[in-house]
Image (cartoon, helix red, strand yellow):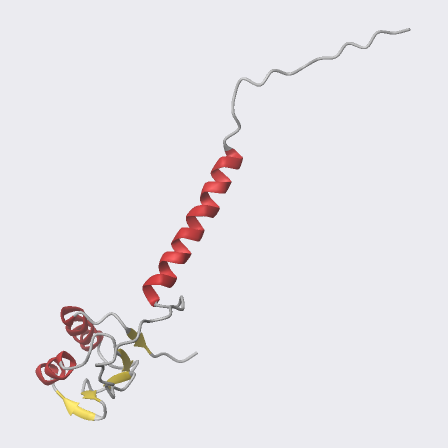
Length: 130
């Protein structure tokens, strides 16, 4: 009979590749959850209060910039100063929709964005065509 010699391989190192894979999956899960919390997508059951007033506010306001560089706030023609005054009266929770003509100057777009940033508006949509 022939003798079989068994060879054993000694493991002196730890394989960290599966550990890195698990950590990347956990990182993606944490970042995804943090994004949902910031946007308010996760449903929560809010407490009730008896002394509340229901505010009738529009969900969004629209700012237009046409090809001539004219600005409109909700279909009312305004200049930059008037636009800033009107946007300062808008709640930070309301969405601002920016509709800028593709032929308008980039500076007009930047001016509107500067006003929105200065006033602290973070709920912003920029409308484009597909």
